[in-house]
Amino acid sequence: MFHPRGVAVFGAVHEPAKFGHMMLQTLIRYGYSGRLYPVHAQGGEVYGLRVYHGLGEVEGPVDLACVCVPASGVPGVLRECLARGVAGAQVLTSGFSETGDAEGMALQRELAEIASRGIRVLGPNCFGAYIPRGGITLLPGFDFAKDAGPVALISQSGGVATDFGHEARMAGFGVSKVLSFGNGCDLDAVELLDYLTEDSETGYVGAYLEGVKDGSRFRSVLGRLTRKKPVVIWKGGLTPLGGRAAMSHTGSLGGESHVWDGVLAQTGAIPVQGLEELVDTLTALVHRRRPGRRIALVGGGGAIGVFSSDLAHCWGLEIPTFTLETQQRLRRWLTTPGNSVANPLDTGTPVLPLDALASLIDEVLVREPVDVLVLILHLHPLGVVLPEFMEMDGLPFPPMEAYLDQLLEVVDRLKGATGKDVVLVMENRANRVQDLDIEGIYRSMRLRFQGRGIPVFPTTARALRAIRNASSTSGIGQLNTGQ
Image (tube, rainbow, N blue to C red; front, top):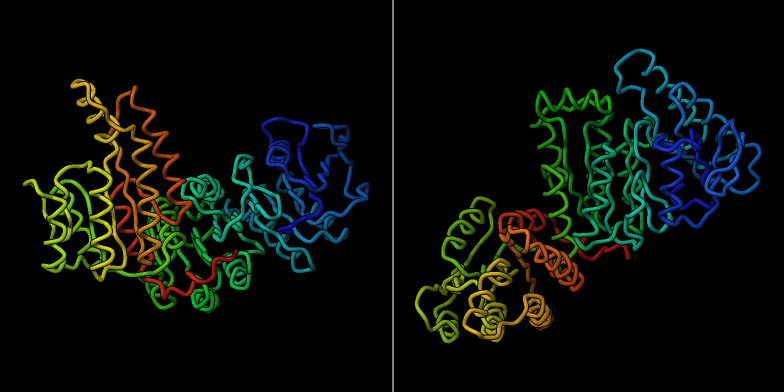
């Protein structure tokens, strides 16, 4: 069902804005190369495709069904698929256990019973599956990347799954699978995590969970998975209000936070809160080659060193003081007052000539026993302030993109020569309308840096938090890229 030769779409395929029509359009726009079979009693044609009255009219292979009919009609569609030998179905329809009423819960039990007879079911109340290698995408991810990668996500929320698909592209990593499973009547969190343990396409696993049905089996499966691959889990519904929302969203019991904290700690999974931290942590895991908590901080501004040191201390990161010999060598490149060379390395000015910056990075990476160097750049002075000052004096200043392009080559070379990681922070405080092009340059350069294995974050706090999270794994997943 994850690499289907043919997909049948059941529902209002003729009606724009209805899920059946949108799902069909999404698969077409994404470029699914297998056979598409719209199914509706009305028949006719849509997007140049014949609309079949029922699955019995379809002659080609059907491995996946997208079910977008009203809740009461879902069991009949699943029985039709089961009789045909369809491998799996993703049920986008809502109106099941999440309603909390007897009718919805009875309908969901009926779906589970049908699934037990030989068809796997994703959902109900989900957005489906996004699998680049299978050529399929969830609703409405027609613009998701088509290049596959080593990161998988399972999510009880369709919205989180969709947002993750967009964020993954900007984070510079490809995905193997994004699976929105909603209420999880058959393929639930435990089943999917168990599957991903042996999935050769997946090297890193993320999850958004609201609840699990079998806590004991969840702990066992998660423990086996984390021994092979890093796992990052965002658990929703840990507060009384969040738990109440989770019950109405997917019919899941949130559970008490101390129980979840214990399970994640015992199994070695990385706990996070929010999509931002989930994506940042996976970014650090994918792009860094060696986990470690000893960091060097390089940037312009004393306060950066102060609050970064505070954050590093709170998150259990080490900022070892550079040796006196290293400090003396660094002084050769920082001859004016207003800087500090102890670690954090305060360059005094937010923009240094590239030869000086390259020499500073080289000295630290070669001579100091750090695991990662965090380089903090300020795009506002680099792209706005200094060029405008220089222009008033009639002096040339390199365009920001050219400066970053040359910096990329410098950092990539030093990273390769020393075998140590470099993490880049690009802070952008430009907020005038005429400065919006800086955001475009930031996005473009971020992808280029991450394409060379240099993770980029918009703030120092997010970078340090991601380093802390990624360093809490054993590192086994660094060798299992899923490529």
